[in-house]
Image (cartoon, rainbow, N blue to C red; front, side):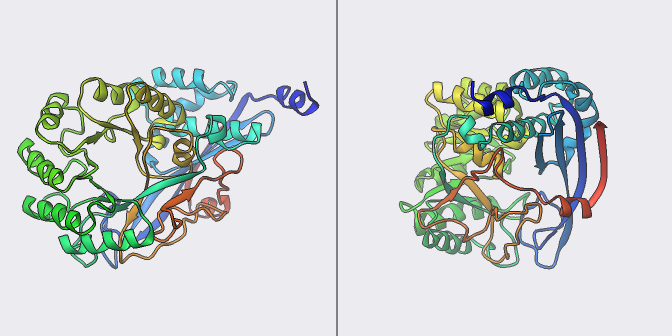
Length: 397
């Protein structure tokens, strides 16, 4: 064994402490509530985040900033289980927490798992995607729009088509529509939107529609699906208000339309996502690294691959890039939420040059790079996190 290898093996990776830092950030011009994701100039809302540190006896720390602040609610329970464990035993910890958190919807499991993978990358001195096997270093992306609005930019079918053409000129290979939400536009306008974008850029970009559980009846989903068929859309995502759990309805929808379905964003865990595939309720399956963690996401990707099915990841972030870089059966990385009138602001949580969701942040081939530093490959700005902290808790030492 080399001296470096011997020294590394002899380091004590026992988990000695866990820190949870709640903090907030102001989001401007994107609606009064974070779930709207639509352009509303002059508005400001406060979004809650939390940052996690897992410390070891060897002094190596795993870090992760979660975009789901609700995850932190289960941390007192998780911390009691993690302290004293070997931080490199991610598979065992994943399975233990999956059972331990069964009555808590497994909330917090994803964040802990990601932080442990970050720690492992720092221990081995490699980015996570290399530890996972490594498949590519540049990721093709699709432009994922904000919701339709009434303030210009995405306020009409033609406005969406204009934006699709703009994205095509910038190098995007694909364009995903988030239409108007919660009854703010009639179904006929959704159908017009599909045809407007299809006529403008169809055949030159892959097109997707994500109603995000918008349609209240099966009939509405059929009408929209048939419009997608006419424009040869790449996928139709989570159309019904059931949350993706009504397997029978989606089997029937698949029988009536030609456009492939993508489902899984609104269920949790490896097993429920695989149930969608086994029940013939979807064509593509959705992965969610922040919600499920890296361990479960890679299990899903490999299980889907064994069936000849592609897995497509929900939203972005350094944790998602690391996974997509190690997965063969994944077509695109989601780049959003994009709007023609919003100004991109750097995410202050990162100290380095990491960019997410910037309209002109892709290369000429419509791709982005994968952070190549150890672990997640990014450096968090703990000065910013501390200065915007609303509460912190430390477990252990």
